[in-house]
Image (tube, rainbow, N blue to C red; front, side, top):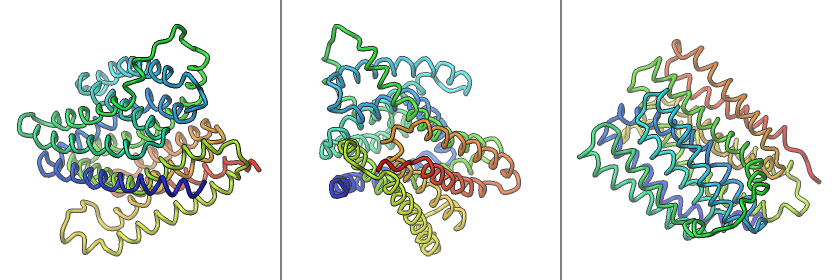
Length: 389
């Protein structure tokens, strides 16, 4: 099993390395062409719509992976689930766009396109169709890169970034286009409810996780200059893109293989322990590497944050991203409610500390709370895992 995970992870690594580098190029072009303040404004809108999209679509994506080849109606249920999710998303966005005073069309475009990307990616992931996943992802990022640059000449503000991101993500609808041709005489409410029951806590988990990003950026926008919002968002998003080179390949490879072997005797407690320790070591090593090379790197690029702040942020972001890996044993034991409790506690903890210290410490408090909340989440996750042997 470990051999299969490493093998699939290696293939994902090659594909995500190319896409990850291009994603960093998208951020660089955005900062150069649109400016740091425009990027900050767009990042708040993007995270806001991503939060709604996670709430409405992630249950479907995770359930498809879990039920793949175990439910003969999986394709039809995915079709119905996507239609229901899209309708729910559009309804929620009416309230969200009014409350946050954002253009409804932009919100809907970003949220639905992110939903299509989420579901399409999971379909390919469950089928372990790594080559096709790479082609789709490469086309997506190339479209986003080209459109972000071209539309900057004809559209004002962050409109070009919205269209570039949305149009590129819609490519993934093609990955599950055949599902829409499937027709049934029954709705299969019982099976659909089972999917929702499994996937809903995972969807809420990702919603709260992205909500934490939104909360941080809203606090910054209220208490600090707009340039701080843009700088912090750009650095944070860049770190996530770099994390994708390692974390996403392992996570994408790990989950389908664990699902395929869940009938065997597996010590999830032991797997959780090794994954947790490995995650902390990886996060520490990356932070140490940045600390050592910081002065050299600043001679060529603007890192926006002081050395210590950047190291704290890298440690926290990497550990949070690795959470998609070290919490897999918890997912396999169907303890999605525990994941939800953990992430909610960390969100409250982070928000309270940030609001209390933002006036005295400024932007420097946010990297610290990212690290603290990530460590707390890792510990809580491990404590919930039980040994099945």
